[in-house]
Amino acid sequence: MFLKKLFKIIIVLGGIYLILHSFSNITYKVNNQIKLSDYYVNKEIASPKAKDNFIATLEIPQINFKQGLYNKTSKYNSVDYGLEIIDNTDFPEFSDLLIIAGHSGNSKLAYFNDLDKLTLGSIITLNYQTKIYNYKLVKYYEIEKTGKLSLPEFENKTLCLVTCKKHDKTKQLVFIATLIN
Image (cartoon, rainbow, N blue to C red; front, side):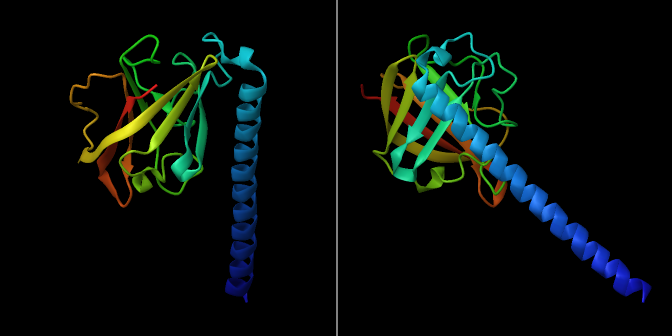
């Protein structure tokens, strides 16, 4: 009798957890969409001084991807909140290299989950301060996950996207795109 009641309680608590977890994911995604809408409607949000709003967006039409980027000094510029602009890299008007990291997997933060579906020639668009930068994917490969990344030299400004490899967290996928306009 006691085990039956305990089992029912566990089932009810599990159901409540699943509902709350789903609601949390939905709320997170809705808030994210609101911030994206705000970015496109109110370009003044794109100020480099913005800390808690998106200052840029990254779009990859081939995989129906659109996500905002925070200022590098924002606490939200972290894979723990979404995408992360890696230190010592910056937007095209300031640097020849921009590296963006993101998670893949099955959590609400797995923004780069579909990068492995990209093909050479895929277009990646960066919207930053009313400017649109189009990149073309020229190379992709996997590396050991060591926290270090060695990149080949490119003549054009370069965008690098980095994520963990699905089903093998000891490896990372690296996607290299060069600026085309």
